[in-house]
Length: 197
Image (cartoon, rainbow, N blue to C red; front, side, top):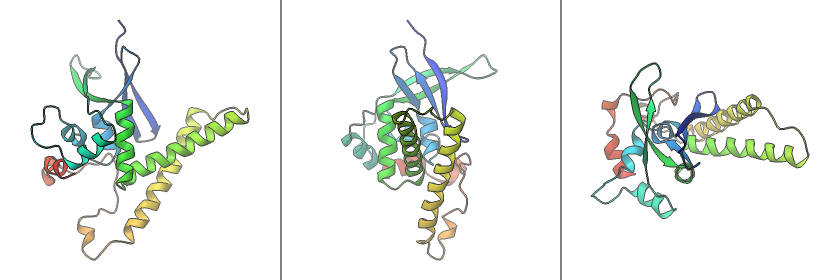
């Protein structure tokens, strides 16, 4: 039996997700990185789709389920770098990851929209190169083009949002958001937000 392999899918600098190649050759993706990639706290999607829920599922989860989302999680043991211990990565399937990003984009999530827009540009360029028999861009060239398209799309979304800002909104709408900088845990009730979503 083959062992599970782990890798990082790096779209560009700072835009990445943990991926796992399972023994059955299927791909799975870590919910922590998915949550952060889409602008949420690291445990947002884990809590949203937590297994064994006894109450009615949150609206966002219901909407995902209607789209074909399975919410089936597999916990993958991953070794901690430089240590003899390991941690658990809560993962979802390739199809569920795609549905999460598509659903977030349909809700207007700027990170999801930018991710889809930049990915489409990358795929279109690559397929066009193949259609004309040209050599495809290197991985470095693809990542650079992705980064430019991703940042351009985020800037456009930010400009659109800034036209809607009312006096006092600056208290709740940060000027600069870096996907790595996550606000302190005590300031937001992530469980409640997941339930309301």
